[in-house]
Amino acid sequence: QVQLVESGGGLVQPGGSLRLSCAGSGTIFNINAMAWYRQAPGKERELVAIMRRGGATNYGDFVKGRFTISGDNAKNTVYLQMNSLKPEDTALYYCNAEGVTRSLRNFELWGQGTLVTVSS
Image (cartoon, rainbow, N blue to C red; front, side, top):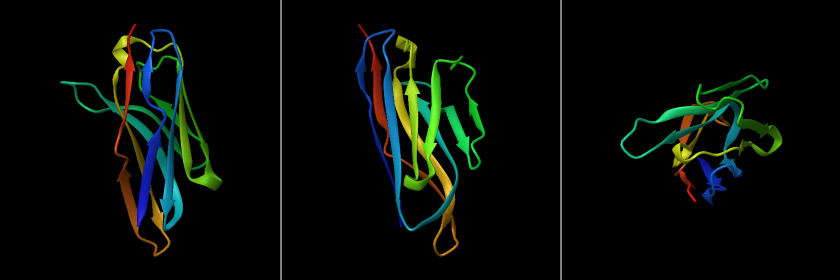
């Protein structure tokens, strides 16, 4: 069984920074990609950033250099450093992971979500 545990959300003032973490645990053989999505009230879930095995990354257009995704393969962990936060970044942020278990089964998993609130 594979689990994802997110942490790092909270309340921050506009212009501030937060760092989100997502750690995978359980019977993971390898992870092919880990990503952060977000969903604001009344809006659809959207991709924030993705890191693929090998290190390739992509970001949502709205990021515009403010966020950085990074990972620790040994710990099956991905981070999202968010700088210059804006009120419109307020959302529930979800971690997503795709990979293979030790029994060689593919998996795709979502974390429980961590709330980011940007407000003065």
